[in-house]
Length: 206
Image (tube, rainbow, N blue to C red; front, side):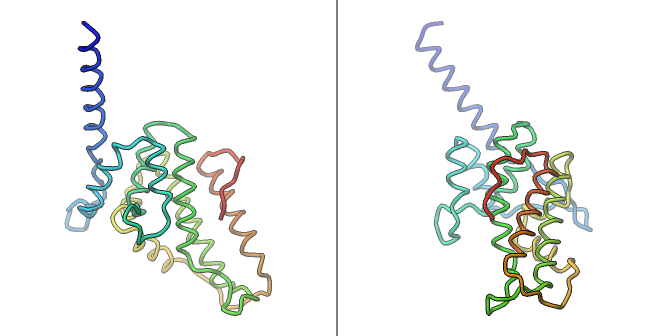
């Protein structure tokens, strides 16, 4: 085989690899009717598009925070890539995706501070901790073995978080400790890293 043929074969293999990556893994959870859960068609198309990117390119895309940005990647897609990272068994790759998702989750949950910024609503703090903890538990379990409950986060991420909020019990009093929630969030994040089997070095920002 000459050099030209070798280059051609390499190019064909690269194209084949991208085609394999573009096949989006279907969800497994079923509705009461027996019908499988399905992602939004736009989400499916975007996942196939993103799967052809290099890892650094994908990280750059999912790191975009503004939803108004045309290049913004919905959280449903981010959850998909985190779940499929099981096949790689690559801790560093998983952690890069995980950090971004956790930051999104923390930003989406209600702040524990009261409007005056001087007191902390224990109700909000408790709910935030419980929702975050439950989400991490689901993600941890899914990393070990497929958990169909996580499918909902690929169908409607915001709705899935809202469901966790509704199920989270809370209290009603307030405590005058503005820094308490930060300590709780950091502690909860460290606990989540242990649950996910990640190292404790370089904790992500919350």
